[in-house]
Image 1 (cartoon, rainbow, N blue to C red):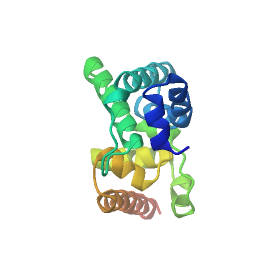
Image 2 (image 1 turned 180 degrees about the vertical axis):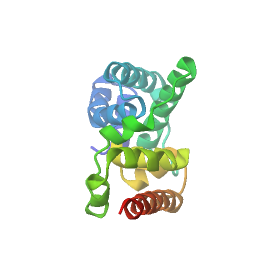
Image 3 (image 1 turned 135 degrees about the vertical axis):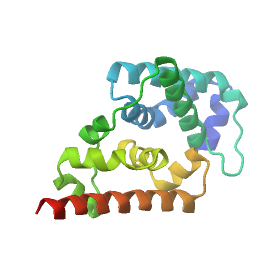
Image 4 (image 1 turned 120 degrees about the vertical axis):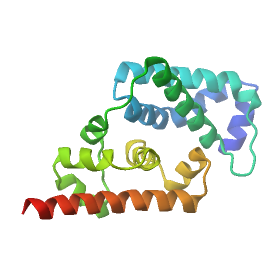
Length: 180
């Protein structure tokens, strides 16, 4: 059963919602965790996200460039934004660098770099670039999935991501050369 069928069946039978929950729980939890860096808050916000999804599921409709995945992540993003608006708190970029694991070969340089250097470099990126890096490496999402969530084209997200990675590499390499 594909995702579209599952969503349609979940609208009438909540046992199918459980399957959607299982499909998306880890990704949503990881996404929210890398926005909060607090397990109890992440658990609460993840629960709130799925409650909102359940309540609004009957309103969801597949349209061009509007997948269920994009929809559920948009809800999670709104839940996190609402949380921070109510708390007047923001994520410390240092927490991202302390918990972010970058596993691609092209980014081995990051793993070798001092965490403080990476934290400083990440903090110099735009908010959009930081968000794409968090979604890519924190929630382990593909760029085309991120594009759907951010409601931007694949090309725009790819460009944003590669500019962010290029900027990070440039900043880190500059620091390495300055320290030699």
